[in-house]
Amino acid sequence: MHILQLANKMPYPPKDGGAMGIHIFTDGLLKAGNTVKVIAVNSPKLYTPLSQIPEAYKIETQFEAVEIDTRIKAKDAFLNLFTNQSYNVIRFDAEAMHQKLAEVLSKHFFDIVQLESIFMAPYIATIRKYSRAKIVLRAHNIEYKIWERLAANETNPLKKWYLHLLAKRLKEYELSMLNQYNGITYITQTEGEVLKNSGCKIPLCHIPFALDVKSKTPSNKAEEKWSVFSLAAMDWQPNLEGLQWFLDNVWQKVLAQMPQAKFYVAGRNMNSEWLQKKYPQVEMLGEIKNASEFIASKSVMVVPLFSGGGVRVKIIEGFAMQKAMVSTAIGAEGIEYQNGVHLLEANDSDMFANMVVELLTNDEKRKNIALNGRKLAEQHYDISEVVQRLTNFYQSLIAAKK
Image 1: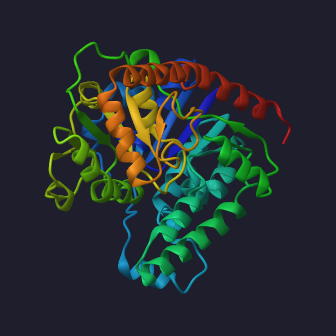
Image 2 (image 1 turned 30 degrees about the horizontal axis):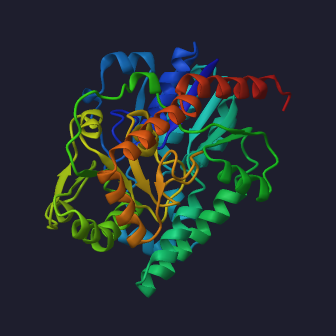
């Protein structure tokens, strides 16, 4: 098949969950024998100079980037209040991308155009104008659900009102577009149910996040004793809110039971405010060079999330690296896990602290949960099996008359 992958962010380097989620499927589709061309939004927030992308990758993916300024601007946000448009979406709608798509689609044939997230939906009309390819939305999340949760957790009345407005408009747009594609793939079963119950009448397919699990060999090196860690994108609000909750409400309770414990916070785009935060036995690392080595060197992973959507990429990566972890229910949402078997679930500060301490002090339980997580990743989240399912779905859409 000939596939055009239209990405809402730069997929290379694959250092955060969003980029990994795009890149792993590019690689998987290529290895399955398809040709894949990638066109990506290169925004100031996550800007990547083309010179930093390997030539082999650019050649293999026929890679092109379109610079679009998706940053939130006070004036634009204010003026948007007097429209009925979703500010979340229109920031990605740029004439430069419409022109690039017209140019590429006029010259090249594609069987499938894969849209990475709802934020690429504004380009459907241009794709239809220049191509007969089947358009598939790869829904990373039910996006409006993220904003509804952010609004629900916000305490500032004015900010709460604005977040509710963003969520309302995004929901209206997201649901209005449901039947404008030829097919939709969703990451979690919960999201699939939302799509079905929202009036989606086009073909749907469950395609979970995946990794090359076989390449993520668990390390034989000794873990740092009493170490706890978080590895998450530090420019995503749900991560920041969850980590702040953990630091304010959980960590002191862990230290009360285990004064020798140490917490490492790592992640891309950690700002100066976070880097300068001071808590006992906490080290703010920011971006790290080798995520696999970092994960391998620590004992217990924590995922304290209370908003967001989709599958937590780092949980799957943690499973593949054979790491024991404690997560909130929302943090592990969408993953086919059993509480107490593959990870420990905790939703309040006392339970979360007790679970962390239990994993740090009970070597046998920590090792068993880590091993079970690895087996789960091998069985359900390996890219080769997931890409085969995606390929079958694409072939069924191509064979369909509509």
